[in-house]
Length: 428
Ligand code: HEM
Image 1 (spheres, rainbow, N blue to C red):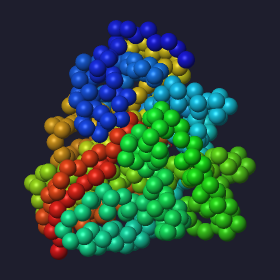
Image 2 (tube, rainbow, N blue to C red):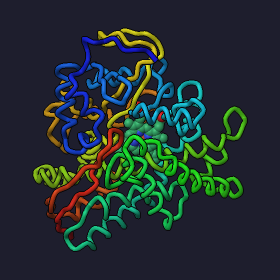
Image 3 (cartoon, protein in one colour):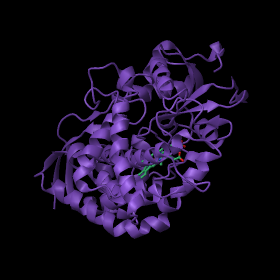
Image 4 (tube, rainbow, N blue to C red):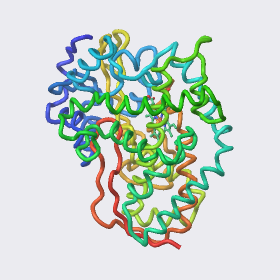
């Protein structure tokens, strides 16, 4: 690991501290921080107590460029998410020197990454997903029926948004409906480790919750049983595809199979429900935008893109420089850690007109909420399809919508979104 010497590009402490503070991602401070950084220090160094120094990438253009250069900026050399020095040390102790508890696509680089990605990539392409459209529409209709039965008010996150994408991904994975509450809780514990309401054991310090092996062990135990079952009795589902896949002629290892299940099961629903809830929140505050998309359903795909830009549920991923390089006028050293701030790129004034406005008809919408380059979100077509279908079913029936109390966002420097959204509505 290099020692950063870029004193001239050091981010002022009060600004840098927000980047490592989960609460700043919940109360909107992070957007002010990003705005300041884009204008004053778009590629600066954050030094935060207890965390290794890292470069903070806030401009759209720079995020794309770093994401595209996968040989120069690796995912797996250090943790691909922001972690404290203490958590990093504990993980390396537990994992024999590796900085990773899991080995998912996110943790891999060439040549392994592509081999593992190709195992399921075709499955996630629109041609294959088309055959799921009717099944997903049924689940969307059930979600809309649930909402209609709430009698005009509900917490849209807990009672609607969380369940629909979960149902979709679990049915695709072949997880029985009865086990969904367990999957939801485990995912919330994984992504909500820093949130006092979502964490498994909110009494322990945040740094300790970051390497909560308990959650990963529970996930692995669950999926190990599914994996064994699908090896013995393969079906058409995604779990069977993963369980029976081979790399270089050998069956994939237990750690890698479990990691695959965990990333698909977790990345696949929290993000999608957050984007949907983020959009409903924005529509409740902007009745003109709701009226626009209700009057012209051909705007639904653009509403979906705007929802994802607006919420940007994956806030950050980290990369590590593989050699000394001058990038955007900064001298990066081999081993330097970089934080890609997707939500900043998605509010970059150089790319988006009025970036702080929610516009259902925004065109073009070159958001980078799904990342870019070799790791571009594998589930992006599924996420967009699910959201489109839900809006197609919900919007024609929704005649009035307003907030009914104070919504709240979850606290996390990694993946976050609305955790509470009380609404009042009328449905036909
Ligand atoms: C709105 C919903 C979603 C958002 C915002 C989102 C965002 C992201 C982001 C930012 C990345 C990293 C990209 C990069 O490093 O360049 C990613 C990767 C990934 N996503 Fe998603 N995602 C969403 C939905 C899904 C769904 C529905 C699935 C699967 C069912 C999924 C599975 C994955 C996987 C497997 C990867 C790792 C890909 C790789 O490293 O090659 N995501 N996603």
